[in-house]
Length: 131
Image (cartoon, rainbow, N blue to C red; front, side, top):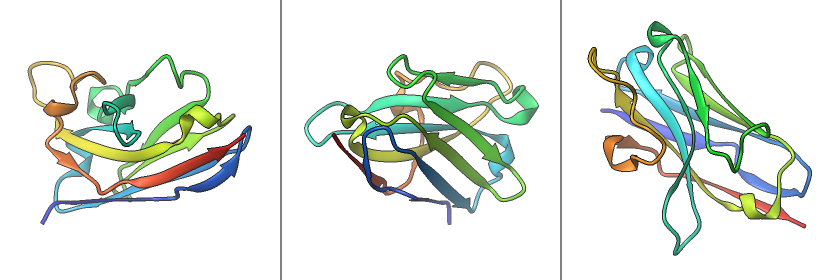
C-alpha cells in the first residue's frame, strides 16, 4: 500500500523555523517527483516546492512566496522528503501536504501549478505562525 505521512508541523512565532518530514512507503521513492503544497481552509491549494529524482538531477523549484526561506530535500535511503521552513511569517500558516508522482522518461516533473498531476498525497500537517 502506498503511503505518505507528514509530520513536524506545529505552532511557532514569526521568524522561527520548523522542519517538516514526509515518510513514504509502498512505492520506489527514488524514481518519483516529490512536492510540497499548502492550503488554507477555503483557498486554493498552493504548490510551494518540488524536487526531481536524483536520476533527473535532483533539481528543486520554489514558489516566489517561499523562495529563499524554505528548502526542499530528499533522502532516498530513508524514503523521506523534507521541507525546512525558516523565517516563518504569519501568512505561512496553512495545512502542508506532500505529494508524489512517478517521473516518466519523457517530460518533466509536474509543475507547482499542476497539483492534479500528482497522484499520491499525504494527510497533511498543520503549521501555525503567530505574529
